[in-house]
Image (cartoon, rainbow, N blue to C red):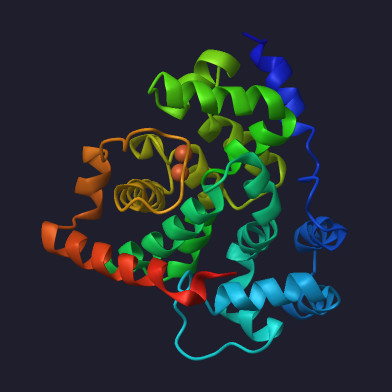
Length: 275
Ligand SMILES: [Fe+2]
Ligand SMILES: [Fe+2]
């Protein structure tokens, strides 16, 4: 096993995902700079045709479920807000990196994002966009492993399959940490909002979250139920058990779950998912 410090250093040195357009790397910095405005950020996004198109497709998809059509980047940013913006941009731009890491990871992430919104609505959360964004990028750590250690990570995915092990266990055996921890490093390094960092870090152990327990529990449940319905692929041969504390915290019952599952199945079978 490699020394943990070496792995952490390599992951944290990722100043950006290599396949991200330069405009996005600049944008992430602009969002952090003082006195920045949504208008300024919108102008920057509009300069990149590919990014703005994908962003509009995303906000008009079942991932967000906004009523009515959102036709401009500015309108999209107003709806999503600065808090969730970084995660959202990361989510729309991470597609290529996800595809390279693992076939099916993108679908798993999109599906989780839809599930998270449906659960957030059920539990009465006001800002459901935060739940969508957190679920969309919850497996960011897998992408960082895939970029930093491409051959090794491919081999680990093969090992999880042939030995029928959970990917978190195989990752830990090999790297000393799993993708949730690696995701926390990179999300912190990139100054993601605290809630998003916690949701990524604790999506497998939501009871450990300090400030964002509900969000982590939503992301956890969305991750489980998208696996249950078999949409996309997350690297695991089996579905993990739903964490009982997360389930209790959310206070949902069987009927709520049934509603979420049926709405989710409808959403992922729709054409609007082709982003
Ligand atoms: Fe995960
Ligand atoms: Fe996942």
